[in-house]
Image (cartoon, rainbow, N blue to C red; front, side, top):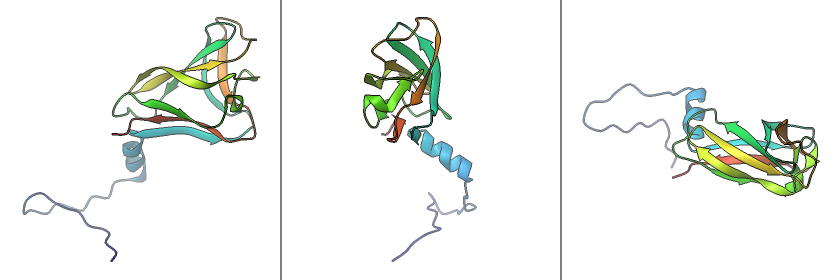
Length: 137
């Protein structure tokens, strides 16, 4: 039994059949989940940020649409799949603050950053990595 193209209505008056655009459907989905990646080696840049010390950098990750709630950060792989200015991370990036329209993401390396300098969070290995943001119900 296959059923498609059905629209349920409240009441006895039917309205025109809705056909939302692909862009509208994507935006509706991104209110619940947004993912940057998966990306493999080649220097994909996740975000720009600033080094808060010689070992930690903070990155602002804006979302394409406002999420339904403050999201949780999900990642894949190991710390070495991520890099800050070409230096492998010693810890998988983590969230330091979330709002429905953006999240602050921390990256940590063993050493080599200059406090106050601009930084970037990149992929670092041949293994796929991603940053996911979930505001599921």
